[in-house]
Image 1 (cartoon, rainbow, N blue to C red):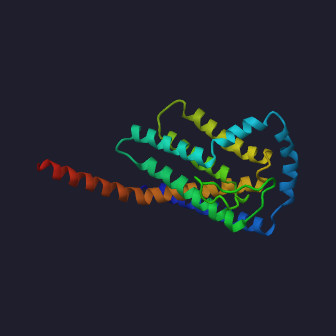
Image 2 (cartoon, helix red, strand yellow):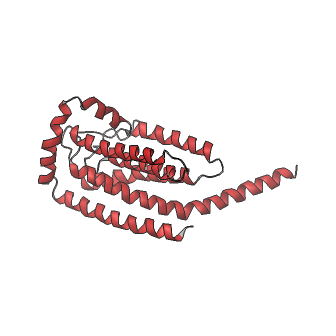
Image 3 (tube, rainbow, N blue to C red):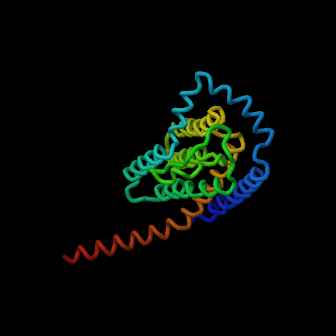
Length: 234
């Protein structure tokens, strides 16, 4: 386990958890800050322009089902590239799986109404009667966790194009956030809350992965060694 890296991840995670909690409590007490209304008044009218359909398509990238398929595809590619190394797969499962759970609890705790029409959760036919509250933005959290994790993995590659890919991924994260306001699905603070919670959970996932994965890896090696020894007897 890399001690310095874990301490860095932990300290960053704590800072972003504190920011997320403060922002959540603030929104719970002040559901619609003036800043949100002003930004909403500026950006929402753009939803009636030619930007509407491009933003809808980009947003669809991180709908629950699409994000799930993108995660599975990424994991398959990682398994193909790193056949005996499951670190990145474990990290991706932790960020995306845990992110969904934490988003649900955060939305349920704050229970902020959306600026536009009411949305209901629909996770593979489950929770269809559960209201999907506004804070924090689930789309922003999924976009941040998925694309940031992919960017983190890319940074380990010795490729010339990794800087360009990371810029594109960060641009997507930012665009999806702004798009949610333009489409009148979220307020500005919903987006900020999504980024904040995304950062908090991403760093937490790194800490969890650094602690738990080495233990699992050793157990997997032991099982493989034991199976190999058993087969060699016959």
